[in-house]
Image (cartoon, rainbow, N blue to C red; front, side, top):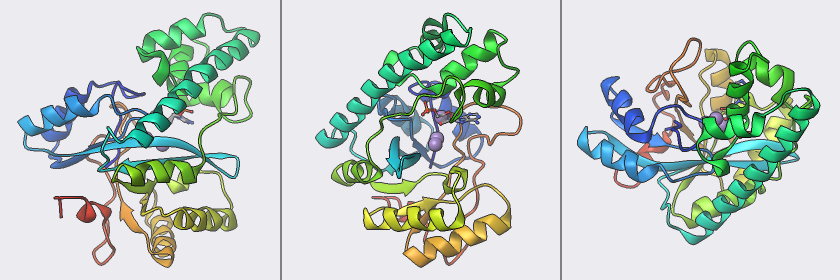
Length: 273
Ligand code: AMP
Ligand code: MN
Ligand code: MN
Ligand code: MN
């Protein structure tokens, strides 16, 4: 219920992603590119050819309390006008941010990053920090992707630019207007105190969010997540957040099992229960 293709920062084309998923035994798959729905038609067609039930999705970049959070929209109508306009405004922010990231990298002594990252992204409007990270590794300014985030691209680092994403409430509104379900993605990955995480969940509930994503981390962490989700009446969703095959990252199909007795979001999606 959470994957990426070349339409954002994944490395497989939508059809390649679907075929990899099918070959690994996946029968229900959502493509959720960052702020982009351009890959859904290709994925849908590929899925219909290999017996995979396909859920059209998106992962929206949003702000809550000045911090970036990701909201998945699942089972969306990608033609819904509010969603189309909203995603297009985010992609505009992305291309402006990319120019500023490149300028700050220039100042830090890394030249040619705008062209380099654009070449890796293939599409200026989809440009994100992952493409800059790959460029930094390619040019040996960083040892690997996480090193690139640690040295340059992470919050507070030399090439970090505060993004001007829409509010979390707006993102949920666009997903609702597109007939979809909203999922707070990877809640364990935001750097928040227990108290602040509680406030985030509360705000997500007040903005009519539907579900939270179960992390792939330790059982203990996920059981406290389940309790918190149940406290607010959220369903649970699960996914690999697959971008590319590699060591220490989940492959497509590797997602936490939603325990019996806890409402699973996928059961509520149109026609898939
Ligand atoms: P953006 O939306 O352009 O700010 O980029 C966010 C994306 O960068 C995430 O979806 C991840 O794919 C990737 N990312 C963020 N932080 C890290 C990290 N520390 N290591 C590796 N990838 C990361
Ligand atoms: Mn990503
Ligand atoms: Mn994310
Ligand atoms: Mn993701």
